[in-house]
Image (cartoon, rainbow, N blue to C red; front, side):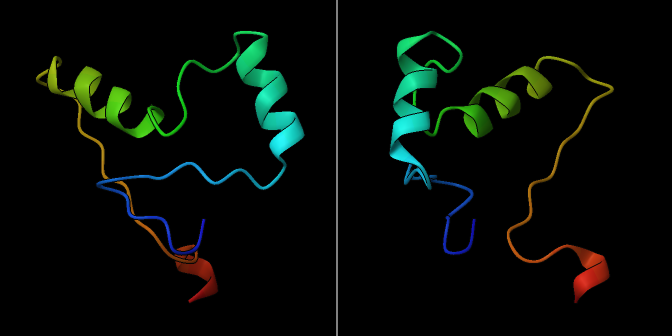
Length: 61
């Protein structure tokens, strides 16, 4: 989302009702934790890498 800091993501849901429903039903664990979890898992595997970029997709620049 525009304005989100990749290194320190802050959860600001676009639709709080849907966000709360997903959290309450167990589909998401903690807000803003996905990027950190992906980075942790990738560090465990020597042949994997990941890079997150904030901004519009390349084809729209």
